[in-house]
Amino acid sequence: MSRKEFDASRMRRMKRVAARHGLTILTAEKIKVLGQPGGHALRDDESFRIVYGDVPKPFSASLDDIESYLDQLEAGEE
Image 1 (spheres, rainbow, N blue to C red):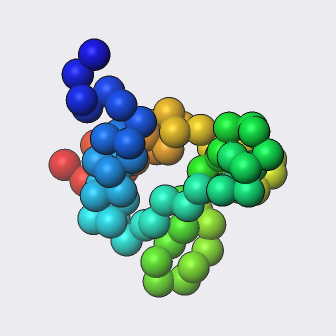
Image 2: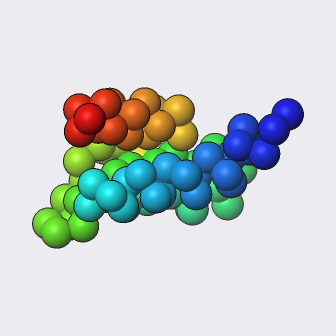
């Protein structure tokens, strides 16, 4: 398995992409402490509004969901 497939590496790469679009990736740490996988959300840096990952409940997006959303943003910018 290559380094780019590790979750930490993926998260760093996605944070860089999100920053280019004025977004921040948020992670629900409380859920991780309870032994469940932590969910994610994307927040707009200017308005501090959640733009993705809060429906149907807060921090409902998986890492794969966030990556797909950011890939779509990147594709639209080209």
